Image (cartoon, rainbow, N blue to C red; front, side):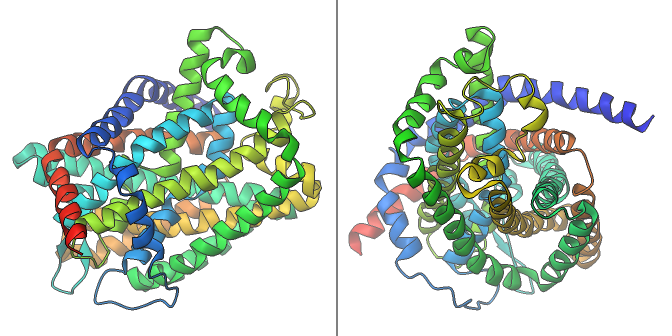
Length: 475
């Protein structure tokens, strides 16, 4: 009976996601990104160097304390912790399996325009944030949505967004992360999922109780370590497979426009799948336009919104053009090239043995050996997914406080935290596909009110671009 109900829900959710991804999500993501790229005169290109200086010019991992909020780097690290998660490993793998290697090209397109989008989100987060009587900073899309749309309509959109993000990230999203950790640890170490779930829930609970400062101290240390570890391992694989790198890039570009040659079916259906997979997994990876990372950027102790905007651009770059791309190169160069097991496409018995969860473990295993490859990816995914859970929990908490009011903050945060810990545990026990589809559904729904507000507040964002340019010239 339970399996029948789950199967029915799964089918409905899949159909909703297909409609949202193919007809609404792709349009909104590209439209917002293209709009801000034009209106800011390619801020992601013009101000990229400035962003790199803001991020790495005064880099410190000493965990500086501040009166509410975070340093600019801590805020970016928290945003990157949310961005660089299973979307880069499991999500990218799912996009490649379903849409072919060409889906990565469309992820790049989404990310390029997304860099302009995330600039807008970060500047608006700083512009509209509020500080309560205890000195705590509250900021995010709900605050700039109500500024964009006054009255009942604005409150409705903000409330819709708050509920969607609590379900998408605070609850369902954390299930995706713990599900991936549990699955890879079971493959690598044969540890039962429920044990992984208990340990994760306990450790996360300790950090959740510590609030923003503890979260900032953890993410600013974990993000550089996790990225460095994964990139080092990937570099070893790419050096071993270096003769296949040209063919790997060729496949990404070829199958972006001829996806039917690798995933089958007619051209129209295949190109739709490749583009929608790139958009859907690209959104889940870099989160630009989704409305999640503005919560982290709002915490930054910066005076000029433009400063955090250019820092946010770097976050999307690191997420997609560095970590996700390197992961994709490893997968394609080991599994899709002439000697790879997926050279003929994802067909036959392979569909029963290879999934988006173990695809990367299989890829690293071709060079490191099956056992060590599985262990390496499991450890990296633990860092990635764990840091994402920490950030997403904070994003959901901010919206729970918004929904139930600052007077009821302690009670609402306690209830929200307990529920999220239960979801973290349950994620290690549930069906992988169901968890991903539910998360995708609420991710898609979050985009709509956030995108509407971004369009409505174009003037505010453009003003900050020009103001930042003038300030930098004076400096």
